[in-house]
Image 1: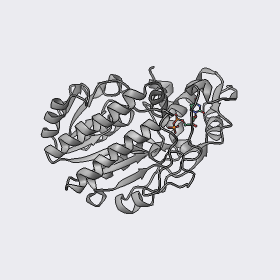
Image 2: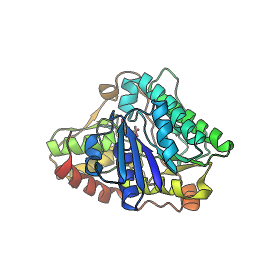
Image 3: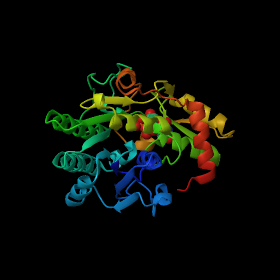
Image 4: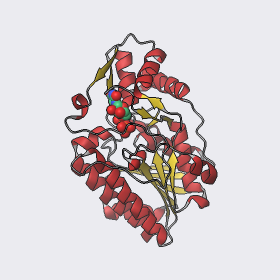
Length: 323
Ligand code: UDP
């Protein structure tokens, strides 16, 4: 197959590209290296079945030309990471909404199947865990920048459903805190990356609030497998899928686990949210996916548990991590 991966130099995108190339596909990547890194795809450059275009998904004629050449589009390019979104709300809203208009618009014009990468942020601060795909969303006010990402991704999903209503094969994946090699403390997996960096440097491990907020950390291999399945399974078209591990872990537990696995002397300290995000931040207290639908329709099942995934991630960090 010929596949276009937008955001293919990013943390998840570059792993997806690797899997596609390994299985024999021809892969086109468009990435403007805003949060993606050339180091993530350096080893692919020059391979006959790989092409990298360093440009933005806002470049409509380019995206159109690329979509015309492929069979399938994985749309992962986005402004990601709560910290980025809070720091630059305009980029988060504009790139995430306009960029998806461009990419899904091109897929529609050329009638190519598309998989839209969305997020567990969609559910906002709802306290009805686990989150089912058709549950209500609970968001704070529009004046709190954090929720702009959830809003933008919701509009992206609305586009996906709207194109599907016109007959285009589209599926949506909602990622739950993916982590693994190539994670980036500036963007995705910021808490896992921050804690590993702090633990290895012997610096205090900074837990926000009281550390009782929870997440379900999903190892990269599982994230990528769920994404691929959404592109492959016909019955998944027209639906959103939670792609995540359903084991719930508090941030304080995560800090302790990383401290133990790195054999670090770092202290674990509790710091106020404002010290990291600035004033007026709202957090999601618990975030747990229901993975029933992904299991039934896609045959998705997470395989790598948190300790094992962290061991692999820490090993990568020690060997290959570059800031
Ligand atoms: N967090 C933390 N210390 C850090 C970075 C993040 O305690 O150095 C917390 C953050 O406040 C949130 C959780 O870890 O409660 C997950 O944050 P992240 O930015 O990784 O992703 P989110 O799940 O919020 O999108």
